[in-house]
Length: 237
Image (cartoon, rainbow, N blue to C red):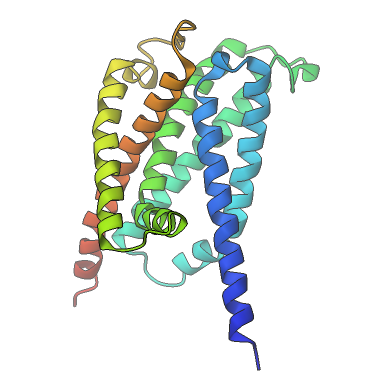
């Protein structure tokens, strides 16, 4: 007879791995957006690390993907799959364009023809990928808040309310940071060269990008809540 305690320990171990992995990917994502502020060599190394972490993340969630196609997908799962697919396309775009613009890791390949086009693809994939990955994070906010409450050893309705309030306030500031930094001009190629203020405090740069990440995640969170309500309606006879 299987030991239920062992099953619980295995579940707890998997949760710990997932939470550690999520934290590492979040840190890597924010750092990658700083590009030249952290140095191009560091940027390339972090990019490869990010791809490896995403592959590991996908491996851990293969069961979720398999279960999705066993029944008719609900609206919330259709949106989740769509966001995941676009995120994957952006990551592949980043990887393949990086081969042509790399100055360190892939430079030995000597593939510099088409570097200008690859640079544009890299810029587009970076900012759109950032948005879609953050939307993906938004679908897991409830889980992340519970994990944060547990880590702080302050579980309960009040703690969850405080964390959600912090999430909301940060998301509002993130929308302002998006406007202030004029991110839209890169997403729609009104400017094909990302501008970095090297005189700016790097901590402020990271804070703004974490806030923007939260803002996009908040949009994903709201979309998921809305579609969860539509899920029930879609299965009515």
